[in-house]
Length: 278
Image (cartoon, rainbow, N blue to C red; front, side, top):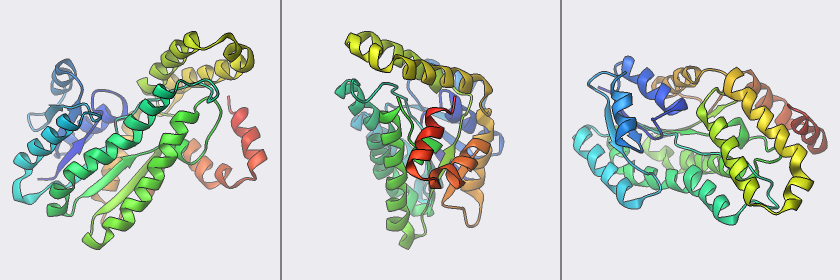
């Protein structure tokens, strides 16, 4: 039986992936933040799915997760870790509160490394795989989401280094790079933008009001017109089960065009396209 851990399983890509893999016969250990989230997930899953309440930024809770996983998988080890949990902090870099910037990096990057370190002993036993949920935003950086892009660009680098470091033990490390996906992260990010804008000095609105409005409009469109998260879940299954998985999987037409075309344009042309993508 293939056993995987997925973080951020309460909603969006994480929830879709947990339920998809459960239906495919995987034993899913699903990290969620609250008991209510755990109960809601279990209502749609088989008895194999095992929710675990964990805040991935909390070292003590991550250690408890590792103990739980070790107890479940035993000597077989863990077949897959899907580092998925994430947030989006939307604000111009000139005015983003440094604590919010730190939180963005902590949740989207540092915490994933902490989880990976904690679970690697179990992953080694099974020669399991590590699947990092990055983003097209880890290959292309636009305005007003600088903190988010910084976290995802760093996740791409972390994935590359891990892939090389763990190759001698047969541990595959894969980056999933979704484009616009219809998930709650966009609405949550827009709400965060409103909250931060209210705390910023008047100059923030004067200087960046149009850019902020454009980014919110883009987020609103993505939350409804983006691909369903189940499309990402299917790609994650492929990355887990392919005999020789690719190192990167862009998901969606926009991600494919972004990684294959836009990312290779001259800087000023790329800047113009990203500024007018809405």
